[in-house]
Amino acid sequence: MQSQTVYIASQAIRYMEDHLHNKLDLDMVAAALHYSKFYLHRVFTETVGLTIHDYARRRQLTEAARLLFFSKKPIIDIALMSGYESRQAFTDIFKAMYKTTPAKFREAEKFYPLQMEIHLREEPAAINFTKDNIKFATPEDVDDWMELVSLTIDGYPCLNETEYISKLYWYIAEKKALILRDGRMAAGVLGFSADTGNIDFLAVHPQYRRFGIAKLFLDKLTDELLCGREITLTTYRAGDKADTGYREEYCRMGFAEREQLVEYGYPVQRFVFFPKSKGGDR
Image 1: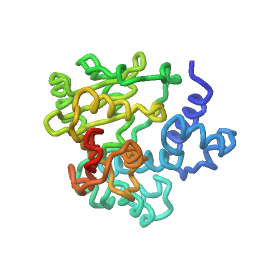
Image 2 (image 1 turned 90 degrees about the horizontal axis):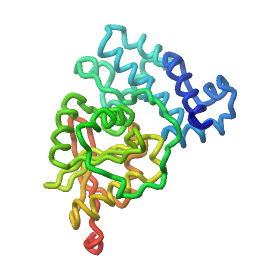
Image 3 (image 1 turned 180 degrees about the vertical axis):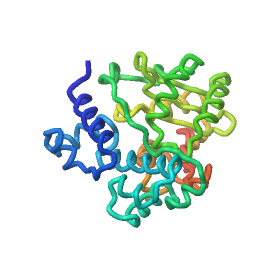
Image 4 (image 1 turned 135 degrees about the horizontal axis):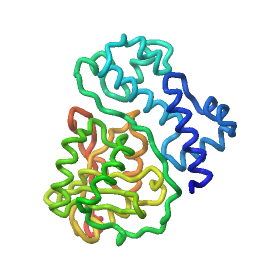
């Protein structure tokens, strides 16, 4: 049975999904569901890991990108259908999130989502996880792993799902894929490279982000699997409006900024975590 907070957040998601072609904001959603906007904001953010504003904007832009790719509708029509009052306003936010204009996105003929619809489950059954709860993933975990990937697509722009699944089976075979389960659900997953010390993929279920799951995966690597090694990853650059908090989370975990890169055509920045034994060398 769902808790009250999950029920309320799910109501908000359902309302927004049913009104993606209208202008959406916190006041509107709160009024429609008859909740205080302050209460709804707190419940939704704590449960989903995004604000209502961010969720609505990312979902609307994803659906706009889908129309750009799969239809021949004029851009102004898509802008209006996405809740924007002008083509210029739509173009400005689309470029800030997708790093290209709607016209060029259409010309590129390559669709990828900013945000998929989030389907919430019951409250987490276990919250007192330790790194010992993290296990090597098996082929039987792939379906649940990919379900989590679809929920956390906001952290990995331009992800090619077919290519990703192929690589995932390789990571599993090589014992480079880790999973933390809460019953039948994947609460977190991580893929890493032992050769480079790089975290190639790290995702935490939205309902578990406040429980320090990402830090547990880092502890698993530093204490058991990549002992004494520098650990690297790439994430959003500073100021990227598409970032839903990943950069801040990695900084909080102790990662240090390094050079800026471009991966799969997307501007990112490399971060490095120094092992405790080398703490004085930072």
